[in-house]
Image (tube, rainbow, N blue to C red; front, side, top):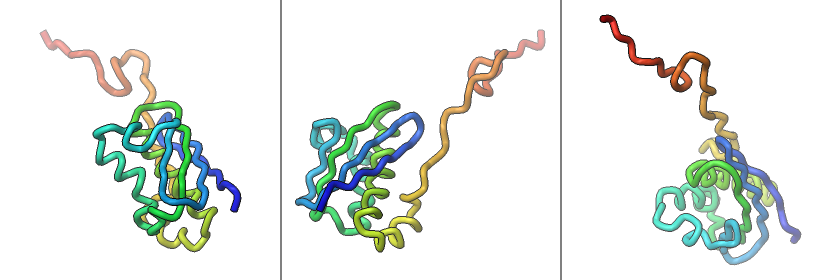
Length: 129
């Protein structure tokens, strides 16, 4: 079977995911998952979550490239991309992934800074006297 491609997004991060039948290897930016995320165990679990839910841990190989944002956004973008690739691989898996919220792009991003404010909503300190 050919490679299956899907894109995942979160905050400013984009993950390009290629899924092939295999043995469960996950390669991100030419590094293994452990080398890429180091000791960030919670983020590793988030990346593997769609595979664990669908019991595809050992039946597919994943190669991914991530850009933009930080490790948290990239991990969630990967999770979204892997979910979308799994559904292309086997449409029956959508019934498992959709109720868990894996198929929905998390659209929350940083609010823009407004003029006259320090940040988006933070004002300067007010001095009454």
